[in-house]
Length: 122
Image (cartoon, rainbow, N blue to C red; front, side, top):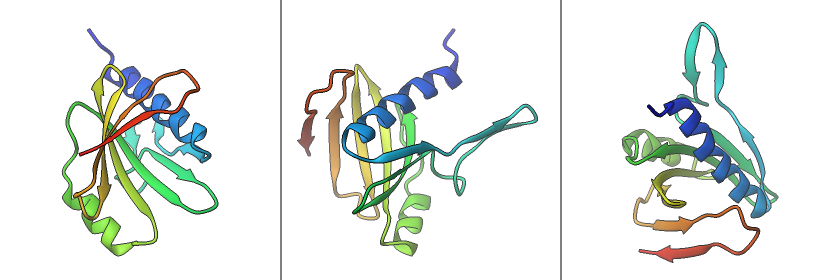
């Protein structure tokens, strides 16, 4: 049986490593204690990534995206932030939704090798 918490941590680490290679300062923002479940930043985000040009708030999930409406509303309220949802599909493939437009759908194939990543726009 797969421990879903550990699986989620592995997937988050892949995203954190990718963003760090892209030049971001990255922090995991989930809180966990022995009395409660994990709590995301604003109830929506797992990771915050910052560089000199951009601030990204990111939700990482596996297989299926979370509902888009809360992310769209948040992105409309704070248009100066980049709001994204990374969905891990297996074999190092992620689908990335950028909000509020949902029109941009990007697939990244991520690896542990320090090489440029293949990106496909669709």
